[in-house]
Structure formats: structure tokens, C-alpha cells
Length: 254
Image (tube, rainbow, N blue to C red; front, side):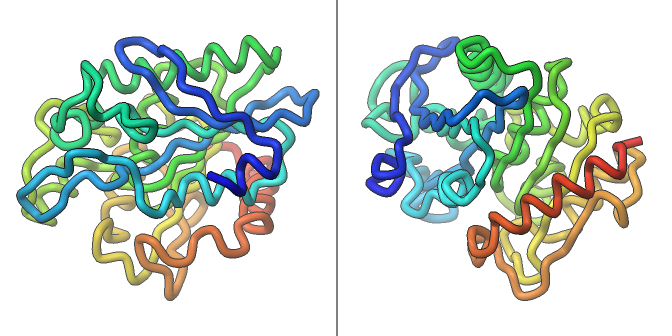
């Protein structure tokens, strides 16, 4: 957080739908496109079966990615109830970082925050980048918006039903499943990244999403050798996101 402040990012807690959301904004504009980074699930559980009292991430990888991105206008969105002791304020309760972490009202709140910043900056298009559960949220946000011109996910659980079955954890019964929206967003230029050593979100989860979208994995999916769920996504991200943007300009998501 100190690095963000030192680099001119403005932190704010804003009302968005049912939730107060913690955001960070860097605007060097003018730019036609607003890049939006959505944070991961954070510290959702203390143990496999015990929810955390506060989902604020100890290592905010989504924020690290945002800080490394050279794009002129970037909005960082924390997930509902993360940071600023928001977990203790209504309507926050553990269901919103466990079974309801991708509930319709959560996705609506994220999209509303994007609307506000887009209007403020007079941006025309949105690029969504999401890490882990933030990638799942980004896909669901994309499904409800006509202005998304790129979608990038990193280590994202893009088929939450399959993911909970594979990990043998509690089903996210109050949440939307990105795989069910995959077909509706197949027209959006998109790239999904997974780590070869990720034992939290195995690469097969992304393949399931692409199959649902009927998109070829070769054009839209990259498995990065030696990377796990947390290592080492922010390293070299400036160059990697530049290559992804160039590739998506050449290869429409069709």
C-alpha cells in the first residue's frame, strides 16, 4: 500500500451497490481505455473448514500486478469486505468471502464501481484483469457489460463448480459460475494464464471454461512453467501484459 501511495495512486473507500469497496486509482490519461484489476479471494479461510474473520489478502497479488502495469489509467478493485476493516461492517459476513463470494450482488457492486470511474475519466472501453477469484469475478463482470474490449485472467478458478469438486471443498452454492457465462463472452478478446505448479487452481479448470466458451486453448490459454498459484506472477508482468495486449489485438476472440 505504501508503494501505491508513493507512486501517486489514490486510495478510496466508496459505496458501490450493497457494499463499500476499497479502490486504488492511478490516472495519467487521457486514455480511451480504463484497465481494471480485480483482486483475488484474499484470506478467505484460516483452515480448510474455518472461515477467516477478515478476507483482506496478506499478499495482494492483484495489486502487485496493477502496480507493474504501465497503462495510463488503472483502477484496482478490492473484493467486497477487504481492507479498511470493512469485514466488520454490514452487509459483510463470512458468506461473502466463502459460498457467496461471486454472488450476483457482488458482481453488481464491482461493475458499479467500474461505471463510476469510467464516467469520471471519460473512458470508452474497459480492459478487465483478474487474479485468482478476481479472474472469475472479471469474467462475470464482462458478461454483464457491452464495453469490455479485453479480458485477462491469472490463475483463475473459471469453472467454480468443477473447482470445488476437484478440491473437495464446500460448493459455492450462492455464487455464479463463470463457466456458465463463458459462451456469452466468447466474442471478447481474452487470454487466461495458469501456472504449471498451481495446486490451488489446476490448469484443467481453465480448459473447462474454454471448452464451455468453445474457444481454442492454443489462442487463449497459456500455462506458465514453474509458476504456482502465488509465484511469480508480478515478476516481469510489465512485459507480459504488453505481449498479451499485442496478441489480443491480432487475434480476435472468435
